[in-house]
Length: 62
View 1 (cartoon, rainbow, N blue to C red):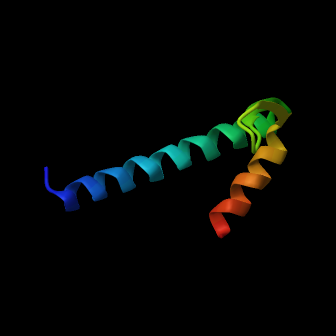
View 2 (view 1 turned 180 degrees about the horizontal axis):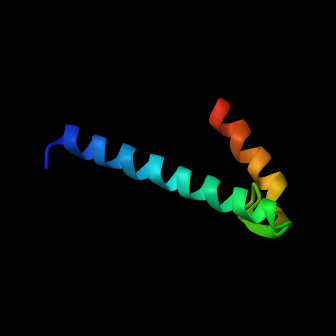
């Protein structure tokens, strides 16, 4: 596999992973559930899915 093919593959994987995460957060937000994310120190943090979705959407716009 060439380097260009690897880059393309990794981009597809990253895009698909972000889409799956967004779908998960949207579904959990509609149900009023919480999600577990890592804080800046890598420690688990339980937050409402709606807040996690807001954070995710903010990082996608950057």
